Length: 141
Image 1 (cartoon, rainbow, N blue to C red):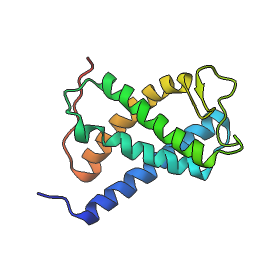
Image 2: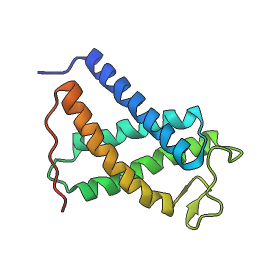
Image 3: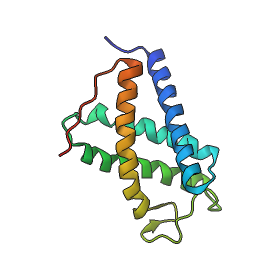
Image 4: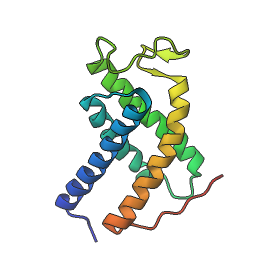
């Protein structure tokens, strides 16, 4: 049965808010402060990571999905950084090696793999518990 547009919007908003809150809280816990724009970035990243299973079959190992999710998260961080982070108050990776325009860096790219794995699993279970979608199952390798 096709999902109505209204239900898709509700699902998007629920997942967006949950992802934004979690992302904001991660920044609060890690740095002690955050910005509302980063909650929006986090919401978009969470929803985007959640769509990985829309085009990757469940049989793709969770490790590969996690690596892909890291690139998705870094895409949103870079996009928001280049647009909104003009004075480096939101994010500044100047002192970290392998940074790109001080907006993203390899170190956090690796961390995002683990956060992305958590996000994939959380998104899948939220979709299962709240929206009655397919029960998640994963392959490690």
